[in-house]
Image 1 (spheres, rainbow, N blue to C red):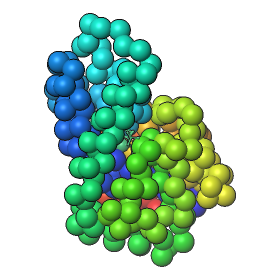
Image 2 (spheres, protein in one colour; image 1 turned 180 degrees about the horizontal axis):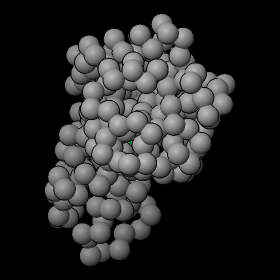
Image 3 (tube, helix red, strand yellow; image 1 turned 90 degrees about the vertical axis):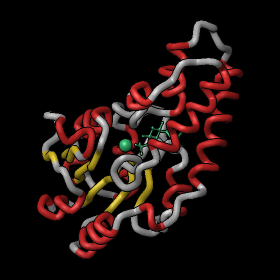
Image 4 (cartoon, rainbow, N blue to C red; image 1 turned 120 degrees about the vertical axis):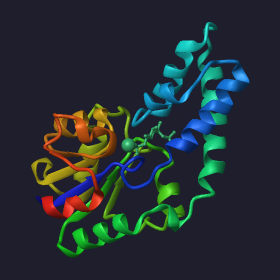
Length: 209
Ligand code: B16
Ligand code: MG
C-alpha cells in the first residue's frame, strides 16, 4: 500500500449536525417534514441528491430553478455554521495518526463528496495535511460511483490497487471497491461486510499500514 484516501465528513470531521440544522431550516421554511432519521440517509450523498430525499415529503413539484435556490439557501446557512469550526474540532488522535502515516511514507488524500471540503480543511487547520484533495468540485458523479476516489489516486500518482480508502458511508465503501481500492469502514460503515477492514477507532489505521 502506498496511499490512504480519507472521506472527510464522518471520518476526519463531523459536520452532520450542521447539515441537519441547515436542511431543517430550509425544510421548515417550506413546511416540509424533516427529522434526524431522514438526515441519516444524507450521509455521503451529494447536495442535489440530499434535496431529492428531503423532497420525498413535499407534495409540490418544484422547478429546477427553485431547487437550485433551495440548495443555495441551505449551503449559505451551512457555511455560516462551518465558520464556527476551529482546529479544536479535529481530535489529537486524528492529527497524530495522519502525521504518523505521513512519516511512514504514505501519501495522503481527501476523497469527499463535499464542495465545501477545502473550506472545512482550512477552518480546522488541516489544509496542508494532505498531498491531494479530490472533492465535490472535481467530480460529475457522486458515491457510490468511484470517480472521487479514482481522481484522488490520479492526483497522487498512485495506482488504485495501492490505495486504501477510509469511509463512514456504505456508498463510500461501494465507491472504493468499484475503484479497485481497499476499503476501511469506520463509524457507521464499521459494520459493513464489503469493507476489507472494519475499525472502531481512527488510530487502528496504524495497524493496517
Ligand atoms: P456539500 P463526505 C458529504 O461529505 C456529506 O457526508 C454529505 O452529507 C453532503 O451532502 C455531501 O458531502 C455534499 O456536501 O453540500 O458541502 O457539497 O462524507 O463525502 O466528506
Ligand atoms: Mg462521510
